[in-house]
Length: 338
Image (cartoon, rainbow, N blue to C red; front, side, top):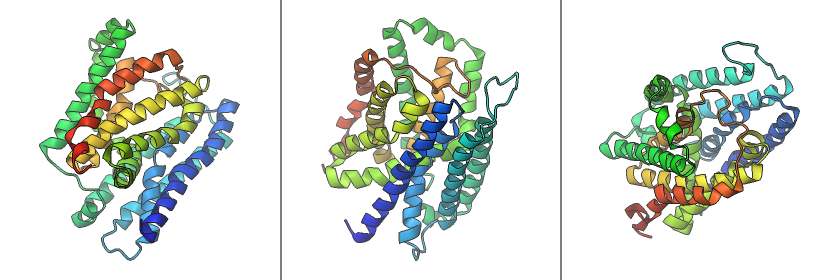
């Protein structure tokens, strides 16, 4: 690894992991105080991409093809979100709205910030020259392969959910979801909503798939590199696992997170390697998170918060996720030039 590449990796680690775990201390404090910490997981999604962009901005200052405007915008936005997270703990503000019980000013404000930031990001990307976007993996590649990968993910996601419900004896609850008009309205809204909140999911995938995946595959091989990427991706979730997703069963949630990140990471890696299009895993990541309220029937802002994870459920979760997503480790892209 060249000196510049080492420096870039160090900067990435400091931002993606250092900032994440530093902010985790304040997230823990807020969680113990019982205040809304929902800004933290939203801000955390931006740290991986911000780490990549800051690394390039600091080490490739003279590079004419660098999309500086987009990078600077994203890094500044990440800083703003981090500050918002800290302030939300220092000054928690509840809103007593009958139509949105339990919601806070911060959970509402973060949604507006994501919408405005996404719109601004699209504008900056669209006015950025194509050669700059192409050089740094930002191009919107058209083509059937990208669409097919996303459709395949949807099919596998629904099938995995159906099988999980069948095994848990909840298949009737799963099928009843599709008889609800609300379900279909929310499904129809997914494409529109993506354009309004994409920055958060881009924030993760540009760091994991665009930057870290090729780096790990070059050093460890295509299969081992992706598996290790899934592990470090899962470990990166530790603060939200313990202080947001599951404050009572954090350790089991962390183990479940490993299963999800390794198996989904394999599929996302396969899709990215098959299309060379970062927007494919970005869309799939968005769908993975936003289909949860659709199939659970819980459309509240805190649908992912305070979950309960049982250790006994993990072996079956591992088996099901391995069947639907993990087996892609045997696919052709992973066999080429191994």
